[in-house]
Length: 145
Image 1 (cartoon, rainbow, N blue to C red):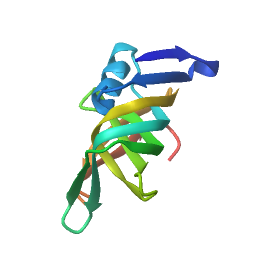
Image 2 (image 1 turned 45 degrees about the vertical axis):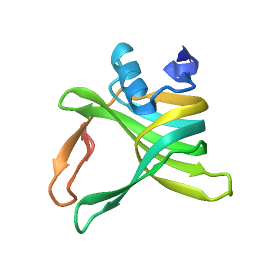
Image 3 (image 1 turned 180 degrees about the vertical axis):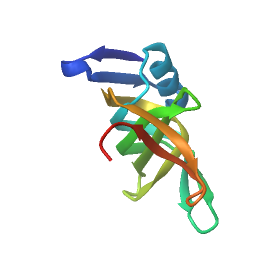
Image 4 (image 1 turned 135 degrees about the vertical axis):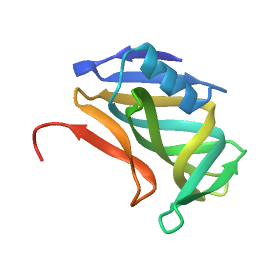
């Protein structure tokens, strides 16, 4: 992985083949003192595990895509869970048949390259469990309600 800071503290990150994206981004955030921000990316993934969340049962259906897939779009955010950086990402992946698959990214490896844009936030952003939805949702420490 290589990265550089560009304007206003934004970062460009290039992940290399076979890096596990969730683990690498979490470690990058820890190593560089980031606790909140947003991610966008393009590239290619393999061994991608995606999930679809069912609110009524508060469970995920999961599917693993072993083949190399075009990373058409990656959007996500960084926040704190129990004081530690937590990466939350959704992706759209394209296969060789030009079909698109999408969902919550649990894990996946870079197949070729992954080019990531990260914008850090100065806000205090964390996640707290919400029993109505069965997930840890975003919470903010701020003065505007």
